[in-house]
Image 1: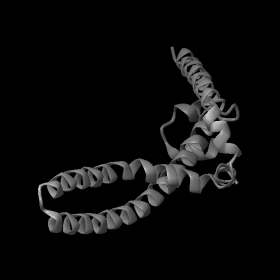
Image 2: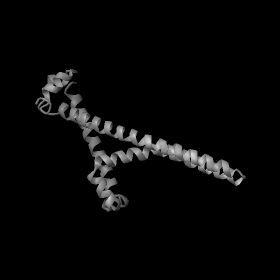
Image 3: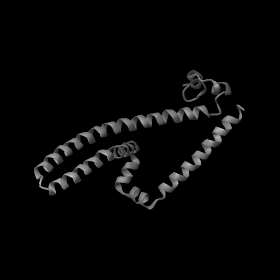
Image 4: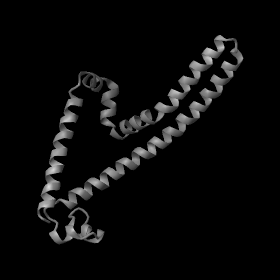
Length: 158
């Protein structure tokens, strides 16, 4: 039973890797993605992956505040059609300043989050590669102790 479990995990990881590689291939072969990657911005982001990931996290996180801001703009525009022009200018000014503050804060948060995500990806991938490396002893794989994982991994035994 103990020998079947790592093979099952390995097989599941291989299937997951195949599915992910097919998804990445279909995304990279999209004509719009190819056109963007040939542009100067795409080439710059390709050479700076941390900046690209930070930009992606920022865009995803700023979608909700921008949506709320646009909703307020539409609602105040409708109110302005009813004769409340001064209120519209005030609300849009306050809303614009609030949006600026929120987006600056989200910029810092997205930078920190993308840094933590990349760091955790590096740690998890190195742990997985050490866990499934052939140089590890079977006894150290079964041990839940970090010390045995560090000793069996040739990268960390330096």
